[in-house]
Length: 414
Ligand SMILES: [Zn+2]
Image (cartoon, rainbow, N blue to C red; front, side, top):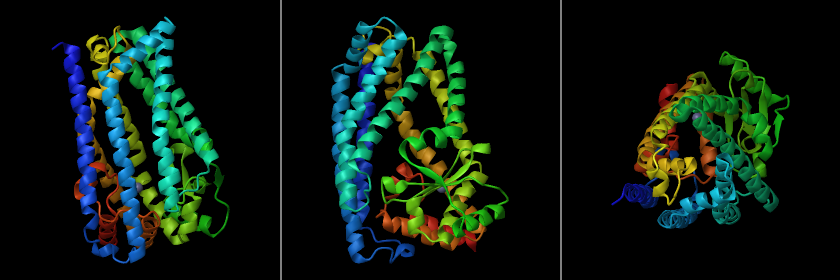
């Protein structure tokens, strides 16, 4: 067997491994649906609402199964027919400028992925979410959002990979050092300006008007020993009835963002408690640490990629007939699948630890009970699964389960 054939076989094996693993986790979760509800969550749903929750879970599970099988088969077809290599050759026949070749590849690749994902996201929004009363997205918003997401993600990937390719042409194998620096600047920039540049494309943000809620929030923020004048309300109700709140940015660009849906569902005490949790993240430097972790992970990836980028076997594994930066990158990221599979539960374990810490922060400042009642409301309104399988939690959950959080909150406030 030639090296490209071995690489292709490895890629197919890895993609299959990922498919099997996610199928097994989904199957485990379904089996756990009939598991008794934890004591601390008794009474969260009445009987009718609980059967609705179970129906919602089944509908989502079926849709996910169809999508998973479809994209697995599609990936196999693309790999076995060498369609990545074919597309690369096509782009190369249109222009002789390597940068343009890569940009053409990216635009077509992104467009293809967007079109393939469309029926699934359409079904999720207008059939499942609609049937269970969550959907607030109009058809116009849906199509505009799809177009905007495609344009934004294409511009951002084209920009980043364009810079990476240019650095590779200038610095050769050493390009990873400069590419890491460029990406670090980009990550910091996006953290600072995400609220100003990206969010307004999809949502409207307005400053939280003066009043009782603003007073309670400012009092709480002062109690945490900080000042936070940028409190915004976002029109989450444009898309869904589901609610959220978050902190974003750092330094002078830090801001609190509340969904209007959160304000409709929760009392002021509960909102302040949710913000106390978010403030816990801020105090523990979680945002900053996530940023550093992202940059370091990218640096390691880029370093390994720099050792392989010139190897003609990588593009050849995907059906390429000439050296190609983008094909090497696609092959490389597919070959990283097992490392991703290993790192995902690790990253989620760290994230869950950070969530416990943020909850403990809220509890220490006297917000345990309103946080518990707020989280329960969110779970009930969102028809959350109260009995996820422990292995699914270990692998996929960035947050502890509601039952785990309630127990830990009560312990921390004692
Ligand atoms: Zn959190």
